Image 1 (tube, rainbow, N blue to C red):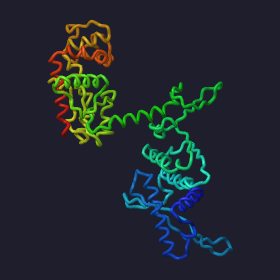
Image 2 (tube, rainbow, N blue to C red):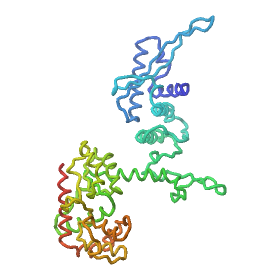
Image 3 (cartoon, rainbow, N blue to C red):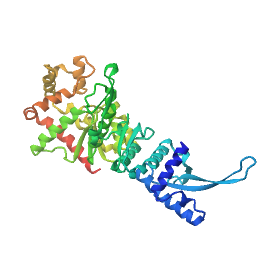
Length: 403
């Protein structure tokens, strides 16, 4: 690897506007100035495309090594050395002692920068490049290809990494699928692949991109699921049209797929954006959020429990409806005829329904779908008590905007 690197490094020296004749000049001052110019050029090159640590500086030097073969005359050999200064940690390390990912990245820059000026242009084929790099470094690598190499070269690479797939350029993607002995390996742009493993990198890239775009707003209301989203969105819009208190339009409502996933979303994105969390009032459902609040990751005022809106210990968003009104939604969704007298207890309505039906839980999204299909007719028949409870919820959420 080191011998290959030295060839690559010579190429990168040429990118810096020098060659071995200059850096081997016998005059110390001229040689030193040339090495410093090369160091500046290489440092700029690295820092442009290695965003993980902007405090690195590349420092090439010439070492003089004396060699005396058996019964021979001592020979002085000049050897090119490369150290990386890390100003963040106030130390320097030989290039060979840096991470394998950095070594690969730097060697790639050194080797392939020269192809920018190749005439005629070449086609670059890469097999699983950047496998030793984390997601951000893979993005830097793609940026180097996009900004530099593709100006002159065609670059084709294979990958299993979702971070090496660019969601905005899916027309470039080709799927390679092994379809057995008869068909063999098939290359296609058709994303309707029958093989889930083949689709995984593409699905991963799209999922990551979707998450990034969900959180583009400054103020994000994180809720557990799509039913929470539907109730809040539809009733807020209905109340706003009536001139009644509603959710501030500054909010972006983000369903994350379950209470257990909320702490992960907050940990990943809460430091960069304003996040308020709405959760059901079961204690086991928000212990992690409470701990995050104590550790300073999330203000306690930004954790809103439905039970607090209802003035009781436990409660789900479905409990904001009058009991009979939610049962009407449930009955229409599942073809049932449950009455309030049949779902006894003081716990949340969804728990009482599940207990009566002798199931662990039911699909909470289906009653929300009933409203979606007949929004105006159903919302116009809801009681003022239901609307007032949602208004209290919206008021509580809106108060966290200025926090």
